[in-house]
Length: 105
Image (cartoon, rainbow, N blue to C red; front, top):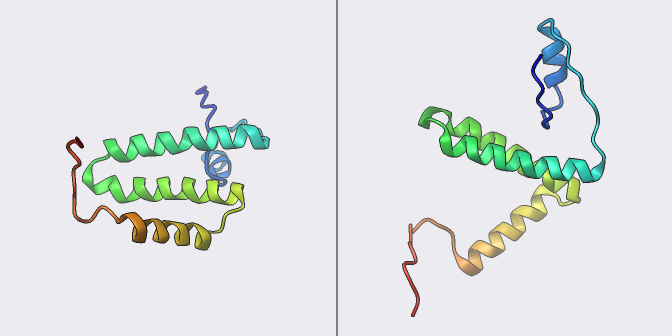
């Protein structure tokens, strides 16, 4: 038996059971859910950073899926999020110029 105690995608328990194993699950309340989403966000970020180049897109998709779940939990639409992102980019720029701020005196 392996104990995970981690947030998983909705279909994972069915996938586990279809493989002939038993999955013990429980449903999280709001406080637990947001805590576990934050933990999952860090986990997916770490996996993205450590992934080989060929797996980066898959790990980035996982990371974005967690961001979307956080947005949904907070009642923020993807459109609203995208508007805020775009406004911030227009005001402060993006990262396309690859600028490293060394110091300010």
